Length: 470
Image: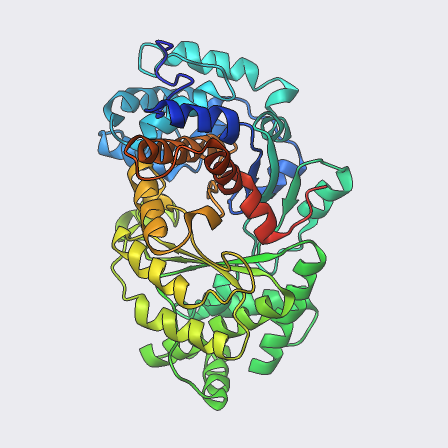
C-alpha cells in the first residue's frame, strides 16, 4: 500500500471493496445531474489564474471552517489577495481532521493536480505555485477539467427567466460533454419578499413576452418558459424548500392573493402558505405533463446570522439544518398528484438526518411499477454529503427500499474541482458492500455486486433521466 494519504485503496477496507471499486466503480463516467456550476464559465472555457479562484471563491464549506479556526473575514469573502486567502486555508486544513473537508481537500489536490503532499502552512507556497502553473494549461480550463474527470453530463441550476444563451453556445460549439439546464422556479413562489417577487414577475413577463395581469396570465407565462426550457433540453426541475406546501385553497383565493401581490400588499401567514401550495402544485403539473423529473431539497434553515447576512448576502456559510415538519404536508402534496395520475418521477433529499427513514418510507408509498425506482431517496446532501451521512442514507434506503435502484451521487457544487465527490461516494459504496460480504450479510458474488455498483455509479441515472449523451 502507498504511503500517500489518498492512496489507491483509500476508504476500501476489504479485498471485496477494493475489487468492486477498481474493477467496476472507477471505470464509470460521471453523470452529474445536479450542480450549481456557473454555466458561463463552461461556455467561455474559462482558465483560472490560480487555485484560490477555482477552489475558494464561493465555497462556504471552507469559509465556515476558516471562521471556526479564527480566520478574519477578509481572508474568506473579503479583499485579501488570492495568495493570502490560500495561505489562510492552508493554515486551517490541519485543524480539519475528521471533518470531510480534510478528505475532499486532498482528493481534489490529487485529482486533477497530482498533488499528494498534505496541505499545511509549510507546503502551501509549493502547492499554490504548482497548481497555478497547471491551471495555465488548456487541460485545466473548465472544459479541460471536465474531460479529465471523465464527465459525461452535467445539469446546472437555472432560473426560469434565464435566456439559456450559454447553454445554447455550449451546444453550438459541439462540446462532447452534455451541459443541460435544470428548472429552479423558487423565486416564483417566494412571497416572503413581495417587492422582490414583483420584480421577478416583471422579468418573467418580459422573458415570456406576455403581459401578466392576473394569476392565469402568471401561470401561462411560466408555462411559456417551461416550454422554452424543454426545447433547450431541460428534463428536470429542482426546488429548495423548508418543507412541502400542501395547504387547501380555492382558485378564487389564489387569484385574490395574486392581486394583492401585484398591488404590493403584504400577505398574512395563511395566504403565504396557500400561495406556495398552489405554485408547488402548478409546477408539479408542468413537470408531469412533459415527463420531467422533479427534485425537492428539504430542510435548510437559511441566513441564520442576520448581521453577516446583511453584509455578505446569501450562500456565504450561515445556513444550518432545520427541524421542519415534512411528513404530513409532503404526503398530502404527493397524494394529490398521484390521485390525478400527475406524479412525475421524483427525488426527495433531506438535510436533517432524522428524516432518512421518514422519506425512505414515504417514497415506497408512491412506487407504482411504471418505472424502476420512480420515487428516489436522494443522496446525502449538503451537511450530509460526507462518509457518515452517505452511509446512513444508503442504509436507510437499503432497509426500506431498493439500494440497487438508487441513482447515485451528484456534486451539488459551484466548483469545477468537486468531481472527486463522485469518487468519494463510490469508494464509500464499495466499502459498505465489501463489509457486508465480509460479515456474511450478502453473497460474495462479484457479477451480482459489480453490476450493482456500476448501476448505482452511472447506469441507473442514465436510464432514469433519459437525457441524450451523444
